[in-house]
Length: 511
Image (cartoon, rainbow, N blue to C red; front, side, top):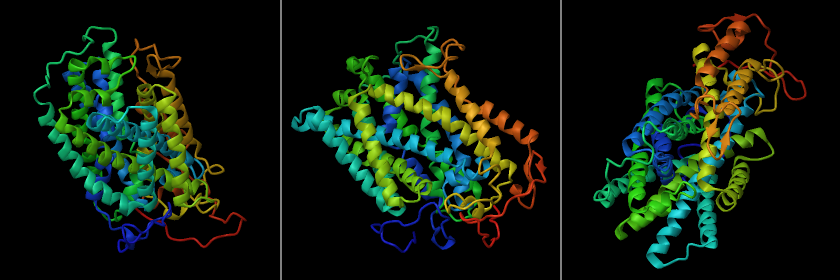
């Protein structure tokens, strides 16, 4: 979309490469979108999990910082694909998983969008209804929650339909407003907050390490969840922008979320002392507990955090998936695909809230996001290194244009090296998942109850081993050739139309 267009003019670009003339975003815009999408009430809910798991405040803070830094380091390199290729990360993954294998990124984007769109609507809707109950006596009934969820989800959907510029405008407001409201919370809870809160699990307890690792993984899931989306926004950044600045924007956007994470952690420790019934492991309710301990003057700020922050999280989660879904199913335009995914997500929201345990739904989805997305991100990063950051923009668009052939066709459109590494790593991770009372994989108890499902090392070793043993075609590496691995003199089929007609080749994009 051209920078000259109005905020309220609906974006028409799908996942096709953004023309250079329209790529006017800056790294600070990427920071605003990524930080704004996480500087929300939904992140506060994730920040409360260390206390809900029984950790002390300082143990919870340590787990939070650990998960946040590791997640930000994993995420940062994923910001480079958008400026290089002018398209989203799922399309860019064609270079490493194959023209058809790129649907893996689309699947991960869908999974993540539903999860975090749901979390934002749940947490924001609960806060709005709870605040209205305390202020004007609105009954906390299922119909009230249902109306709040439906209205809030509809607002998010409208912003996503209008597209990138409108979403960026909303996030510019959300970053400042939510940050100020969180800082205001320091005054609201300063008298009740006690950093010496000891938790319910001692370091020597058999449940300590499972709880600590589990809390860190839930925090880590927040930055990792942006991996499939980051190219949706960075594709509007010019290709010549220094890569260090783009990566720094992505990294710092997640480090900055220590603000909402700390807010959630600190207020959860207050809830555990003053309103213990809200942290009952059988039915924890962070939002209800927060409203129960809040002074009356802070009810309105809580509702504003829920509204502004929830809009930011919901739009960043839903926008990219609608964008990518339109390329997987070409009969859908970007707008139609966004509406379809939005309606599907709303159905999940109601099922997860009224037919399932909300806290278990959040933690289970967060774990699935890590186990499936983290190895995909590792493959993308290693692929970028071995390719020296070189990509053929036209060959990346083969799937979207319903063509065949090109540098990334590999074996019938699948690069089995990347696919095998991802499938094996994700499957192994699921085997080791340990979520007591929710899901425990067949090998989940081998580490004494500690969840060791994060498959980063496995994905890296397996992918590099496959590249060494079964070299990719020399043509996929560009003029400078491969880095760290070898290549093979395997012929690359030309790009042809769906009916087999030859297309005129164009010069590749060199990163």
